[in-house]
Every structure is written in structure tokens, then in C-alpha cells.
Amino acid sequence: MSVDLRAAAAEWLSDRRARGYLLADHDRLVAAFLDGLAARGATTITVAGALAFAQDRPGTDRRWHAARLRVVRGLAAHVHALDPAAAELVPAGMIHAKVTRPIPYLYSNDDVTRLMSVAAMMSPPILAASMRTLIGLVAVTGMRSGEAVALDVEDLSEGVLTVTGKYAKKRLVPVHPTTVEALARYQEIRATRAAPGGPLLVGAKGGRLNLNWARTAFRRIADGCGLAARPGCGAPRLHDLRHTFAVNSLIDAHRQGADVDARIATLATYLGHVEPVNTYWYLTASPELMAIVSERVSACRLRRRP
Image (cartoon, rainbow, N blue to C red; front, side, top):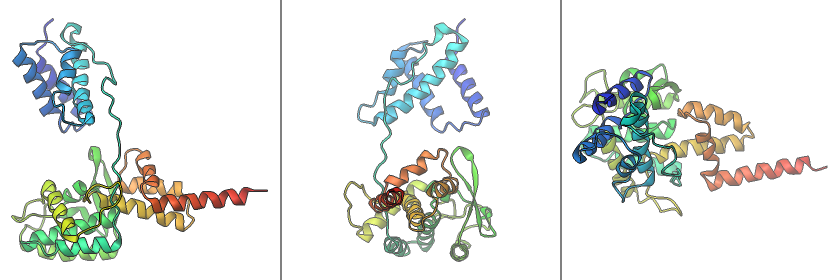
């Protein structure tokens, strides 16, 4: 039988979303792939065609190539199930893309204070208040910057934030009373530009603060602080405030002699990590943390000697 590839793609995307997958980039990538097939007069999905689509931007990262291929691979499997003649199965692992984590820029308390002070000098005042609050909120909760800008006023209740993380999973994040007070002061400023409900962090016109704009603004703020370059680190990023929170939490655990595995389990839940391995990575993210770990291991070995 013949298969209408666009209809099959729509069916596949609808089915995946019904199962709970968000598929943020899939519509665009699937449409681009099918447009390419149509431009060549192709009516079937082939392994060669899938690879060509995945790698049609040579200057981009291999992880992006692999992500593009995964999308086409899923579509090809769906179409193959409808009609094997309409699509070849695309084998897994055809593009190897090892995930490499950048070394985070870890901020000191003084750094965070300077960042918030420089943000407070922005114009107009509502953007200054929003960026200052965003920086402080990510620094003290470790939430993702995207989670922070997605917060609504109603998500704060009795000192607890309801945060929507990856895959639309919600988690409760308790915050310190001083953070609650800071958010209350910000909402007084926010009330001059926005309606009582809706987005917590707002832009110049009272709508939700744009994440891409906020990240760009943060780079300007960091440049204004003159933060010193560190070996192996890239430019300071807004997301590095989250890394700093996680590393400092584990440093405190080691200094207190706490059960680090238990602390990591708690931290994984607090940060909204899907896989605990993502939290264990922080054990290698800081020279100070590595030194403390080494000291605890050495002390444990000494205690075990006969």
C-alpha cells in the first residue's frame, strides 16, 4: 500500500504526544525533512536520506546531528510499520555524539551580590527588578532559568514554589523566608507594570520575561562585573548559578560529615533531575569539592587500617 508521509507524520506526532512526550522541535524538523523529500521527488524514507538530512549543516555540533537523526529514525519506524516499502528502518547509533559537560563557572557569594547589584542598575526599572530577582532566585534555589521565568504568581504559596520542570513534571521547592520577602518586594514593583496574576517575572511591557533576552542580558551584566576568567571555563552563564547551588550543597554535606548519597538523592529531587547520575556529576565539577572528597576518602582509609 502507499503511505502519505505527511499524514503518517501527523499521526505519529499525535500518538507520541498522547503518551506524554513534549516533542518541542519535532514539528519543525519533521516538516523540514519531508519538505526535503518532496523537493527531490522522493516518496520513501531511506537510511541515506535520513543521514543526509541529519548532517546537512556541517558546521554544527554532532549532538545536533544525532538529535535530528533520532527524530527521523522514530518517524521511519512508524512509517515502516505501516508499509515496509515506504521506509527503511534507520539503525540506532549511526551518529556517535558523546555528551561533554562544560566546566561550570562557579560563583562566589560576592560574585552573586555584584551580579544582582549591576542588574539593579538596568533600565527601565521593571527589567532591572526582574533580572535582579531572576539572578537571586536561581542562585538560592538552583532551579533552571527556564523554570524560573515560567513561574506564575500563583506558584508561590506559603513559602513553597510549585516548579514545572522537564517533561512537565512538577515539584515543590521550599524557599527561605528571606527569599519570600524578596519576592514580595519584587511583586510590589511588578504591580506597577502587570496584572495581579499571571507570570511572576515580567518584561518591560508586563508580559512574561523572555528567557533568551534574559540570558543575553545576563551576559552583559556579567561583563559589567568584570568576573575573572577561570581555567577551562567558558564565559559565565546564567545557568552556572544552578551549578553553583548544587556544588555548594554538596560541599556543605561533606564538611558536615553527612551521608553524601542521601544528600545527592535529596538534591536530585530538589533540582528536578530525571536521572540521579546528573546529580552525581557535580562531585567532579569543583576542585574544592574534589579536594574535600579526597580528604574524606583518605580519612576513611586511615580509620580502617589495623
